[in-house]
Structure formats: structure tokens, C-alpha cells
Image (tube, rainbow, N blue to C red; front, side, top):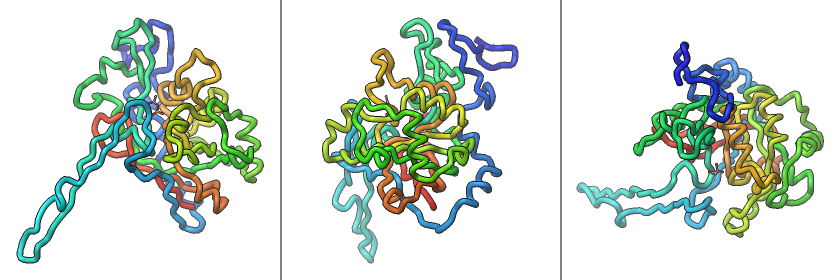
Length: 315
Ligand code: UVW
């Protein structure tokens, strides 16, 4: 329904009220709105030694894929074109078939996760960030609202919490990272909780990434991660994004067997907080670099639900 102000009404049939967003009733950029010129200038001051770490995976055949997702890259022809000209120039192109944003290192946009807030199957009562309905978004040619291209490029402080380091082992599938774990890991890493500021990113190392391409069935069959307790702390701290070395960042299965991906819903759908999955922190941890500048510009793929790409950490 339309309000007098032109925004959508803030209740659904189920009585849920998470919209309008604090960034405005028409906002489609969510927590990426934290990245203002003032924030960029403040964050840039924390660069110390200028080292750049790639914290994304290589996209390659054989990597674990969630559900029935697909990835295939082919070089058509050998070479694709040529030889041309008196100098016999040749070239190669690639052809990629994939859920391109939702494979490998993947950054969830705000059109990815929603909730049926009323009658099952009613697209007018299936809500995403800022109360946008599936009916408003639906199109066979990309989402009409909340496409990943609407997000602002991210340049913010990243704080890495090494829970595997704290526990001295890889965490198990279904093992929830508690807020006490986060605080103990910060203490072990000599990091103050109040140094984590609004608009920053928080990243969790669970050790689960060790299974990547070594035991894909186990990697995909569940995972350790944060639950609603840590998600509420992320919201209270008003952060821009979460990330982890796992495919969903949140604990799967959730200890509450009645819930499906509740952290995705709480952070992305209800608060516009972004999420970066299947990251790699090994080099940062080897160098004991737990604080860095996180940089990622989501692909400008109109109407897409997510983005691949290579995030970097600068220390
Ligand atoms: C789902 O798509 C359910 O999860 P993810 O964002 O982890 O890919």
C-alpha cells in the first residue's frame, strides 16, 4: 500500500514492521550508505604499510557450489579469433555460464533474501529490504528494484575475528559463534571492541575454508557461523557488512531447527546490512593483520541479486 508520503506502508499481513529503512522509504542501497566521503577520509588514515591482500577465491571448475548452482567457463575456439592482419594477431575470449553473483566468493545484494510476510505465494506480501515486494521487483530480465548495481562501492574498516585461532581448531557444522567467543577473540588479538565503528565491516574466520575443494560435500553440508545473538550485536553496532570463510556466514543448520537462514533475514532483509561469503583470510592471519581497509565494488550487473569479484584488504 502507498503511504501519504509515497513510501510503502510499514506493516504486512503478519504485522511485521521493518520498513521504511532509516535511509529513506525509497532507498535501495542499504548499509552501503555508510560509505560517505567523510567515512572514506577517516578510513584511509588507517592504512599503515600499503600491503594489499586478495581475500577472494579463484573462480574455477571443481569449487563447491550451493544447491544446484552452476559454473562453467569455456574458451570458444582455439584461439577464439584470428590470425588477423599481416602480423597474424590472435585473441581469446571466454564464455561463462553461471549464477554469476552466487558462486565462489559472493557478495549478497539486497534483492537476494526476503520473507513471505503474508499469504503463501502472494508476491505482494513477500518482502525484501525496505519493504520492497516481490511483485514490485519481479522481472525475467533482472530485478526491477534492489539490484546489486544500486549499492555504493565499499571502502571501510575491516575487523577480522579469528575464532578458529581462539579455539585452536576448525569449527564444526552447526557450531554457533557466540558473542562471548567474539569478545574473547578480540581480546586475544589485542583489539578493542569500541574500535569497531558504525559503517565498518566484521569478518569471521572459522577454519571451514580449509575444506574448499578438498571436501566439497562436507563444506556444503552445513557450516559454523554466527547466529542471531551476534547478528543483533552487528545491528546494534550499526555495521555495514559481515563476512566469513564460509558459504553463508551464518551457522547452518541453525540451532533452532524451525529457522531457515535467520541471520540473512535479520541483517540483509530487515536492516540492509550486506554479506560477503567464501572469503579467505589465511595470509592476513599469517601476518597477524586483523585490521585493514576492506575494498569491494559490486559488479554493476543490472537487476542482479549478488556480485562476484575480488575483494581486497589493505593494511
Ligand atoms: C542462500 O542463497 C540461501 O544463501 P547464500 O547467500 O549463502 O548463498
